[in-house]
Length: 425
Image 1 (cartoon, rainbow, N blue to C red):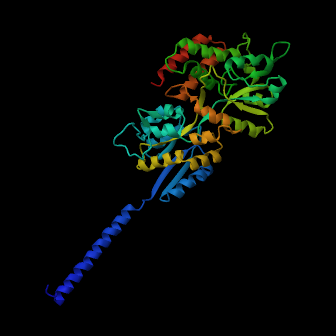
Image 2: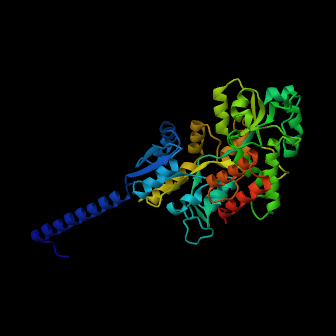
Image 3: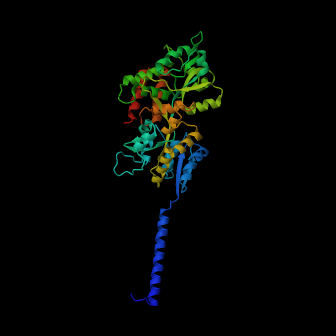
C-alpha cells in the first residue's frame, strides 16, 4: 500500500473529525430523547391540600420529572365545580369520582383499558386481574364497565353499627346483635318508655326519616341489598326490606323504638338517649372528637343470613378525557393507589380505612379500623347509576310514610318505579 500524501492525510483527518461530530450529535440527541420530560398533573379532590401533599411526596420522589398540582374542592359543590370546569376546558387531569356515581361521569373519563385477555396488552400493564388481586370485589362492581377500569379507590368506608357500651352493660346485654333477628330481640331491653308510652331512651335510631336518622336511605339500601342482592329478586322481597326498616318507627309495632320527636340521632347518642346508631368511620371520628369520653363501640352491621353484606361509600381517582397526558395521569393513579407504601401513607395521613388488600389484611384486627377493613371485603351497593338520586327517592318514600301521607306499599311502589329507571344494567 502506497503511503498517503500530505494532502490526503489532511482530507482523511477532516473526514474522521466530521464523523466524530456526527456521532456526538446523534449520541446527544439520543440522550436528550431518553431523558424524562417534565410532566404537570393537575389533581382535584376532597382531601385537604396539606394532607394530600404529605402522601404525594413519595410519588414525586420516585418520579422527579412529575409535578403534582393539587386543588382542594368544597364537597358540597364538588360535582358541579368539576363539570363546570370541564365545560370551559379548564378541568383537571385527575379527579375524584364517587363509587355510586361513576355513570354520571363515565363519558368524561378516559378508561385505563384492562380488557382481559388481550394479546396486545403490555405484560407489565395494570389489568382487571391486577385490580382483583389488589382490591375487594366492590371496586370492580363500582369502577369497571365493559372490561375497562374507570377509577381506582383511595380508601373504602362502610356503614357500621355503633353502640353505647355503658347502655348495653346496664341492660345486661353481653354481645352486640350479629343478625337483624338478634337486633329485634335486644330492642325491648334497650328501650325505655314512660307511663304515657313515650320513648325516654331509644334502643336504636332506625325507622325514621332523614330529618332525624342520618343514614336512613343507606340503611334501607343496605337492607334491600342484603335481602335481595339488588338483582332479579322479587318486588315483594324489596317491599319486605322497606317495611322491616319502617317497623322500628311504627308505634304499633312490638319493636317500636324511634320517632321524629327524638331529634337527630347523633345528638341523642351523645346524650345517652339512644343505644345504637349507624355510621361510617368518618362519623365515628366526628362523634369521638365531640365527646372523647363516649364509650362507643363499632361492629359489623347486622346481617340477614350467613352471606355477609355491608354497604360501601368511598371515592376513587379517574382521568379526565380532557387531559393531554392520560398515560402519565393513569400511571400516577395506578402507582398511587396500588403501592403499599403510598397507600399506607394515605391511610395514616387521612385516618381512613384502607382499600388495598394488603393493608386490609394488616388491619383486619385493628381496634380502630378492623371492623371497616373486614366489611370492605363484603361491601356491596344497591346497583343504580346515580346513588344520590336513589337516596332522594328512598328518603321521599320514608318521609311520606312517617308523615302519614300514604302507606308503605304505596310509598315504596312510587320509589321503586323511579329506582328502576336508574337501575344499573
